[in-house]
Structure formats: C-alpha cells, structure tokens
Image (cartoon, rainbow, N blue to C red; front, side, top):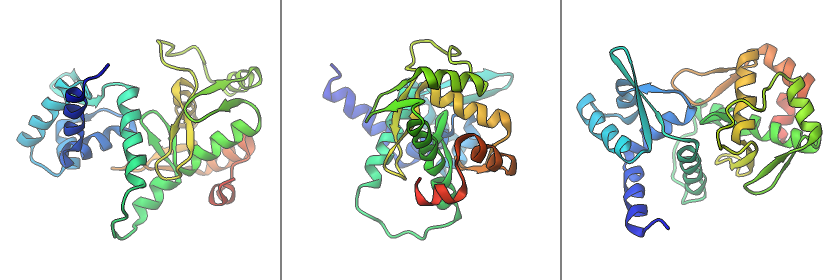
Amino acid sequence: MVSGITLAEIAALIGDVTRANMLSALMDGRALTAGELAWHGGVGAPTASGHLAKLTEARLVAVESQGRHRYYRLASPEVAQAIEALMAVASFGPKRHRPVGPKDEALRRARTCYDHLAGRLGIALADTLTERRHVVLSDSAGALTDEGRRFFCDFGIDLDQGAHGRALCRTCLDWSERRPHLAGRLGAALCSRLFELGWITRIKDSRALAITPVGRDGLAATFGITEQSQASGH
C-alpha cells in the first residue's frame, strides 16, 4: 500500500503550477529540453532545473542525454494516465471565466494524450472501433476481438511491438469529452500509424493535432469519420 505521506508528496510535486505546466507540456509524448520546459513553465533556466530535478527524483519524468543536450519525458504511461485523470477531475471543478481561444478548440478537436489520440478524433475512433466490434471497451479496460486483430494487421499495425508488460487495450477518460478514448499499446500504435501515414500532424507549441487533407480522406474511407460526424459526436 502507498502511504498517505508518499501520496501527499507526489500530489504536492504535481500541484505546483510551474511543474504542472511542465508535465502538461510533456503529455504530447515527446521529449523536451530544459529550456523548452522552462518556457512552458514560465520560469528561467535555473528555476526550471530545480523543478526538473525534483520531478526526476520522484520518477515522474525521465531524462536522457544526447550529445550536449538533455531531454526530459514522462517516466511512464502510468504517469501520463495520472495527469490525464487529474485533468478530467479538474474539468468537473468550479468553472473559471477565461476567454476561449483557437488553441482550446484545436485541443478539443484532436490532440495527443501521451502516446495515443484524444479529443473528438480520439472519441470518434473509439466509437467506430466499438461499433464495428473491433474492440470491446468498458470504463477502464478494453479487449481486442479476432475481427479487430485482423483489421489492425491489415491497417499495418504490428500488435506485438512494444509488448513489455503494458496492456494491449485499455481506456483513458478524455478530459474534454468526458468519455473514454482508446489507450494502451493499441491506442499508441494507432496514433503512430496515423502519423506515419501523414493523416495527422502536430501543431507547434501544443498537444493539438491537425488532420491533413489526405487524413480527412483516409479517416472517412477507413473509419467513416468526417468533420460532420466529429462535430455531432457520432
């Protein structure tokens, strides 16, 4: 059992605004430099280094060196799951007046949640795969059907890649849509495949994703997902 003291220590680390912004920036699954994270945290380089040292010591982030540069990433999918869960809880909290800008809408339309897809695009994919009986999803777990296994293999996804104890199929509560999207190795592989096909691309300085013209055609042909279906939630 995790003690109350340990839980409080981790919660206090995440609860700092600067560190929370840094962890949020790492939720797109990429590794960032200390300088980039300092920008996201709104602090100078020395202050950022102190925050990153605490996050690394607590094993919330991991660091790797490449030449003269050090890159930071979330330490595990479990850390990402905890951050996304906190975002979902926060979305149910008291509403604070804040002007809604283009970035907010872009995040709700499509974004990465660590290494899988979220937002309306993530929900639409989960709905389609469920309706076609490729996957069976519950509140927090999921299962891949035989028909789904054939579909994903035909779609160019290696279901055995990255099988190191991580669940193949599970769900993650989407903080903006408040419904579960597809996570686990399957969700990560699907996201990676859409990037590989050029169907989605990253929006600079954001977790938000843009669907490319070829992506709109591919999503419609393969999954029956259109801009209209995403807007209506079907």
